[in-house]
Length: 191
Image (cartoon, rainbow, N blue to C red):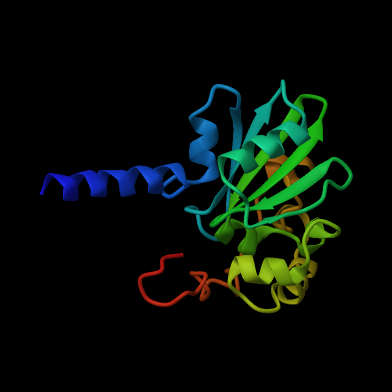
């Protein structure tokens, strides 16, 4: 019986070391002293969806990207384009932006991305096919672009923190994507 408990302990340790149960990116950043939470942007269509903004004043975009990749490999990673890079994790989109203060790390939940982001924000970073897969919808770019084009002023779609900033209020009309609340995979697979 003792060997059964030893084997269970060994399997648990292996799973822990290989990345199971690591949590999301925000939990990782909150657990270090290197990142300061500077703002939280809430979706206007569902207040439980948000984007968290962190700043690291001592590391370059490349260093932050490598640190996050060492912590947990992203499902997708873009090239660095114009001082910006996108990383896709299980339920988070991470946008790294190089600026005067260091590196800004924006961690957005998939629901926030789906309901708020302007598709053109991802030009040269991620393809629409990658975004469709991440968001669990088909034709997100076309449908969201149509929605964004009909909005004006403070109710327009999100273009990342550097452009939209803390003043973002978002669309007040319900998102056409609310029926897509999970990323597939069948019963019991989670979001």
